Image 1 (cartoon, helix red, strand yellow):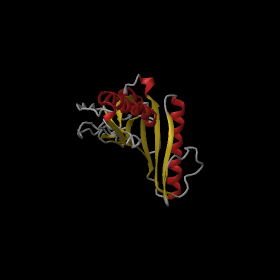
Image 2 (cartoon, rainbow, N blue to C red):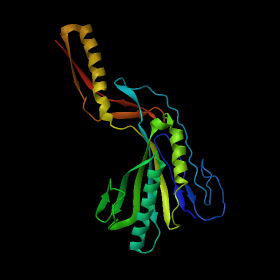
Image 3 (cartoon, rainbow, N blue to C red):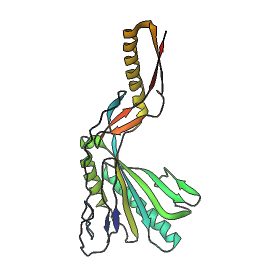
Image 4 (cartoon, helix red, strand yellow):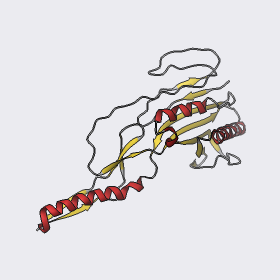
Length: 245
């Protein structure tokens, strides 16, 4: 028997909590999701949000590279040593299933430990020593290219993957979020800077040498605006000053 509680959130996805425990079926409407009690795998729902807005002038549209699912794994074992072993085994189960799946990869394991949290731990870590809260967070990634950049298809693939996970009833696997990942935004900075200077060059030709332009903010952090579930607008907000002679 599985015990799972799924709460999925994303930039443009709103998925209400769904808890699974026991064999009895007790259905009711919680917002937009009907929870299902039993051993059947959970269903995930994707809600599209339409947006209408004027985009900043200096930027470009980009498509996300991957879909990312974050899972929290915890144990209800009473003894600390048993909780550590429980969580470690469950993490290994998820890692092995992801490896066999072929379309998913486990990239990160975050462990809450005494003295602080540790990011990017390899899932093959021999022991989770000093585990404080008996909780680990794992990050599963799937390239969107294989779904023709259809985010809904990636969610269905994650849902199918979750239904294959078999863990003891002392383990709770909670899906924290599903979201699109853009990759390295810095790859777009030079293209956006070129846009700025092309416009300034055009203005310079229009006004001649009697006017000079100065620009700052080209190396400020890049900003993003979600346009759809997989498309974003990456942009800069430069400050242009005009000097007249």
